[in-house]
Image (cartoon, rainbow, N blue to C red):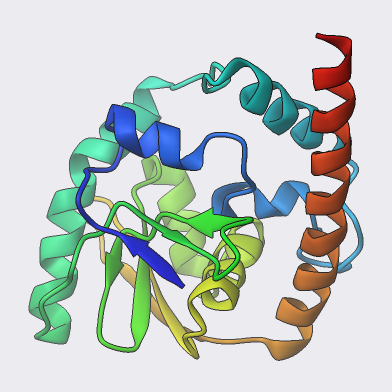
Length: 202
C-alpha cells in the first residue's frame, strides 16, 4: 500500500488523488455484497471514472444535510473510539493499492487495522444497533479497505449523539476479497480501454 498523509481529506489535493480511480467507498458499485456478483452499476461507475480521467475534474456528487452533519460529527466519533479503545488514531488522506489502480480513504489507521466511521441519521443508527452487525452496504468498503492495506481487521463505528455507539471489529473475508480483486482487475482493464477510446475521439 502507498499512504498519502501530507494532505487533508476533502481538500483539493485529496480529490485529485482519488479522481479517475475506483475507491473503496464505491466498491459496492463493482461487486454486490450479498451475492458476490458483478454490480449492475459497474457501467455507470466506469463511465464516471473515465470522464474524470479525460476532464481532470471530479464528477459532481450530491451532498445532503445529513451527509454534511456526518462529516462534522466524525471527529467526535473518532475521539470516542480513541477513548474506548485507549488508542491513538492516525489520520491519513488516502491509501493506494501497490499498483495505484485503486484506493481507499480510511477514517483512521491503527498499527495493524483501520477505522471506518459512519454518522447516520437517528433512525438508521437505531436500525444498525438493533441488527448488531456490519450493514451490508458497507461490506465492500470495509473488506475492500483490507484488500488494499493487507490488514486482517477493520473497525466499524456507527455514531449518533445520545445513543449507544455500534463498534465492531471486522475480520478479513478472504473469499470476498478474492472475488472483489477479480472484479477490480477486470474493471480497471475496461476503464483503461474506455479512457483510450475517449482520447481517440478528442
